[in-house]
Length: 453
Image (cartoon, rainbow, N blue to C red; front, side):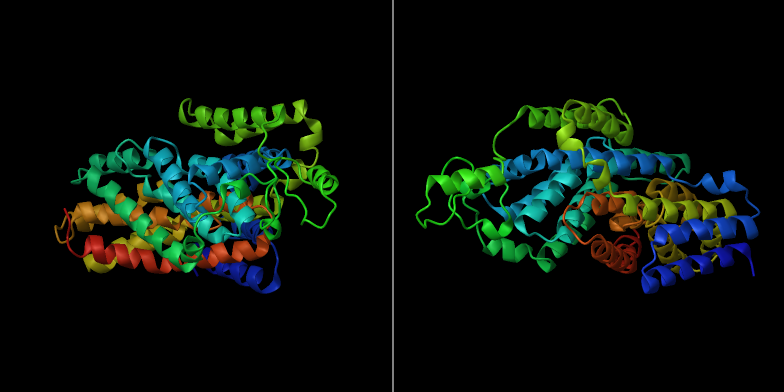
């Protein structure tokens, strides 16, 4: 049995054990990387650790640390209420606002994970506050980021268009951008309908005085606002004394305290640092979090404990094993085997599926850089349009980033407050699996079969 096939079978075993025995998949993947690396690939520890995603580790820790501080001092609640006022109380519009914001960020040049790291914690805090499905909100953020991800001036767009030019293939920058935007917009629309969006729309607008509430729990939102920012108790005769007690228990989230102003400044600084100066989102987040912690230690005392450590273990373990697969040559082996098929349309759909499956666990950009050149031999035969094929590969390799094993999916999983993380992880994994199973076939049918380009 070849090393490539052994490594795939071990990955299947990891999935089976993790899903049937409730063992952290990351821990299993670290053990698998050690076993396969040492016994099959003859790798030493350095070779195994070469696949450890150090940059993603820092991003996950840094972003969840910063936003844990923002939650502790009430900044995320303030942002949620400000968002409600922006859309005049229509909660159903907020998922689309988040879609548009992340799409705009990636379209103007933000790396997709950086845009998701900025927007996801705010979006998911809003979802927790108003009872919106975290799966819906997370999907809207990720699909928004991918919808804008292939504009001619975006990171993904310039990389793919550069590969196309290097391989001397015909290209169409606008077609690539619109293909990704439309596919992600359609998926977002389907998610909105299936996961409660229509119900939110039917509820109409939330009264703006409700949005100014004092961080009250969802089951208390029916209480009227007395204009002080605290939700008074029902009128049973206790009057102002009860209102004062309520204010003590639930601080006013509409007021900008010095800590909240500093946290908002830190969030703006994160956006500017990532977009304007191309600084690392993880290192920048940790630095800003440390500054806030030093200034207001009482707000951030518990923040380190709220870092999504189980998610960090899960993602880093799985991606370390994927690094071993790349070192062995499993991914290249699978791609070359498909590329050698004599039926171009069949090879095209299989390449789309390989791109989707592998990208759900690894770098989308890296997969596109590997698969587009593999498609060159049968594109040169002229039976398949190069423009449509490149667009199909690009969409297949990026739309699956909702997977909890991808950077974007991991950020969504880590950013969701007040959720059962194991259940949310399973939801993201199932949703990612459905996207992997369906979208490559659809984009192949729509973009490749007609022969665009």
